[in-house]
Amino acid sequence: MFIGEFEHSIDDKGRLAIPKKFRDHFSHGLVLTRGLDPCLWVYTAAEWSALAAKIAKLPLANYDARVVSRMMFSGATDCQLDQQGRVVIPGYLREYARLGNVVTVLGVNNRLEVWSKDLWAESKAKVENQAGMLAEHLASLGIL
Image (cartoon, rainbow, N blue to C red):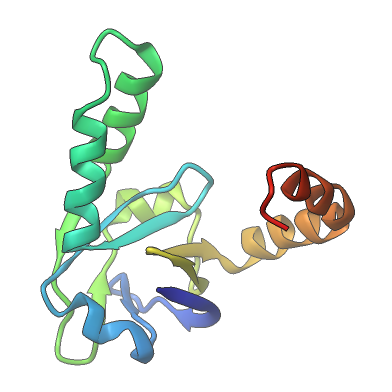
């Protein structure tokens, strides 16, 4: 399980150091793709395979299924960490997530998310301002 929030830099070559505590999980490679929010999702090879299998089972006739499939697969790239635990984020993914030199890496259960530092601060502030309403909704779902 990936948990936590980490601030990291992206260098001039587009390389991001994966937080050290997570690097062993990516020893067999990783997949970067567009997230559903303006961020990137980072999966282990095994988690990506499991997600890909689920998406493959979606009905081709369903418009939303086709859109999600296109977004996830067309934006995906498989990568290996270098000796320093870094991954190169392609320009089109940095542009999609509006990543600058400083990013926030989040551990989100079965994946990492890479956010622009500023976009993450905005998103987190919105959620924190609506915490009471969110708690009520989660309670109605039996989560809290």
